[in-house]
Amino acid sequence: MKKVMMIFLLITGAYIAWNYFFNGDGMNFARAEHSVKVTDKTEKILIDVSSVQTKIVPEDIQDVRAELKGKGTVNVTRHGHEIKVTVKRKGFFWFNSFEMDKTTLTVYIPEDYEKNMEIELGSGEVVFKGHSTDNPVKLKELAIDVGSGSMVLENLDVEALEHKSSSGEVEINSIAAGTGSFEVSSGSVHVKNYSGKLEADVSSGELEIQMDSLTDDINLNVSSGDIDLDLPDDADFKLNGKISSGNISTDFPLENKEESDNRLRGEHGSGKYEINADVSSGDIEIF
Image (cartoon, rainbow, N blue to C red):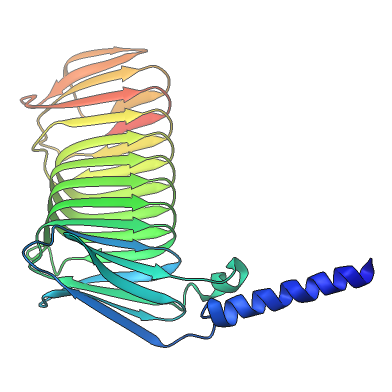
């Protein structure tokens, strides 16, 4: 029985070594680079990454170019009207985990590209920044899907923002959106200097949003977890709060205030925009 077990372990060890060093590109720390030209027909750029540190850099170029330094391979491919960037990393987790901080991906996109973009993060890290608040990245639609890991977004101007987080940590700074939706099922999302219409649904975790200006309606829904909404002192809004369990609170003095165990209503300023807040469990704080 011991001999059989030893043979099994030897075969398993040989398989792991082969997969890691050969099929898994375990010794491949060479630089990989691929690019695809952006045309008038390109409607979306999709970046799908995991277990790698990624930077998305807008530059004065006419193609999507990806440079990988570390273990694995990168592919930039065209699928109809979509350009897709993916990283393939083979091997076993206990080998890959200590290498995650060594493998970096830089994706260069045209700075004048203004159509749609989607970023899917399984794990690892993504950083995507426009040049400045005065020179942001402009997009029609930006869709974010975070499984775990961390993401930093900064200096963006989008017509529609769709954000989903199932875990991990997201930091967003200086973003203007025609419409923005945040769906947080776990983890934390911190947003600073936001402007635009806002829809937020938190089933678990934490969402913090600081708004530079209130220019449209806001809808907040919490089934578990917390939402902190930081508004300008001169914000004009009408608060409609419904409470099943949990709490809704505000530091703003409200006119025509109605408050009970399951309701909080009132107006601040002219009451121009509606803030609809619904809590079945958890907390919403408006300040």
